[in-house]
Length: 324
Image (cartoon, rainbow, N blue to C red; front, side, top):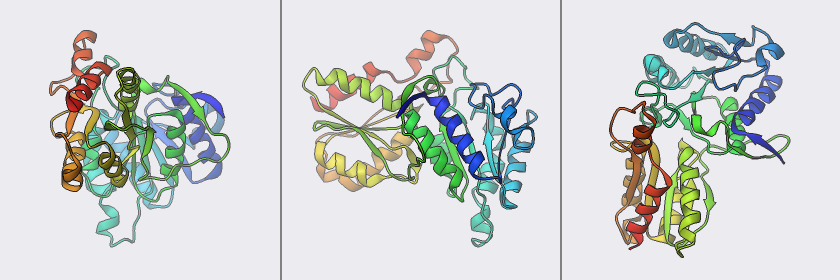
């Protein structure tokens, strides 16, 4: 296995699927000649040309609507949004059309497309560019929602997303693009709805995804020196979600913490806590805790931003609290 950057693993998946499927094309702002804001699409315009790598105007409602129409007609659009915060402008297209056309057509009209790009705080992108929209998207039946945490998962899940016959929302945390990890060689896909136990433990379960996996693993390593063994579950996909792996772990550890980069109030951690309470209540030795972002517009100042988002120390404090 080769070691690759997170963004390189995504690019590799795009290349392999472009070569595999002549109906697939990429579209988005500055993904062609500029090669992408985070350099994910570096070299692809030169390799495939303007018919398969489209630079779009700054109009998310327009180009996402075009992608929906292309998908309905049998093509495979993979749309990059410069930031998922900008995709808020196209939520009518995403939520009212991409998510519902299959249902409204009685199963006759599929929308096989992927929308991918960065979302989440921690890069000093301020209040209008730091949204974590996974809870919003997961709240819309008809969409699949994917958040990888490692280069291997990014490649395997993106290839699965591109081959899926439904609209898939693929969310990449900007602080993960330069992280490194081993990526399997050759054909490699990861099925949706299968969580990954990134670390086994006996004392408490942390359920998380995306950058939260890094925070949880770093915290777990420090806590192990205190004799506290943390199990870390990476959900990888929120829709569909592998709840059985979560329940199995909680039945073993009897304690659970939901960790995510989103705002705490009505974030996906609330759904994790509700599912655990409904299905494993009799196994719990303590209330389910949440570690999440502060419920404030994201500050631009780096010191204030650091206070507004989760970190390893807050995870450690939550674990100590729940095992006390």
